[in-house]
Amino acid sequence: MHTTTRNVLLTLALALLLSAVALLIIFRVILPKRTQPYTLPPAYTIGEWNGKVAVFEEDDTYPMQIFDTDVAGLPDEQRAQVEQGVPVVRAEELYQILEDYTG
Image 1: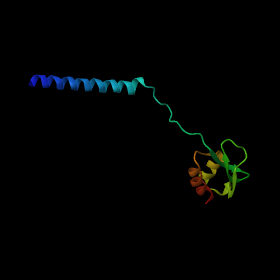
Image 2: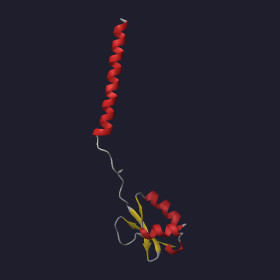
Image 3: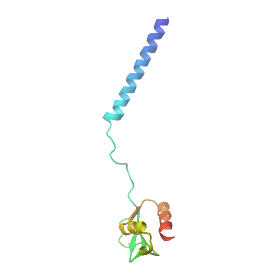
Image 4: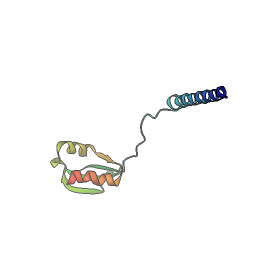
C-alpha cells in the first residue's frame, strides 16, 4: 500500500510539473507579446490660442474654451508643454491640469 501511495504522489507531482512547463511555454513563447499598451486617444488638447491657454476638443482647430492666462507668463516647462500641445484623455484629468496652468 505504501508503494502505491508513493507512485500516485510521484505521478501527480510529475503531472503538475509538466502542466507548469506547458503553461510557461504557452504564455512565454507561443502567445504573441504585446509591444505597446493600449491607450485611449486624447479627447482634449491644451494648447495656445492667440497667446492664451486654450482647450481644443479632439482634432478641432478652434478652441472650445480660452482662458485669460498668458502662455508667455507660464513657467518655462509649462509654456513649452502648452506650445507643443498637451493631450488629455478624460475631463477629470483636463480640469486637474488646467488648474496647474491657469491657477
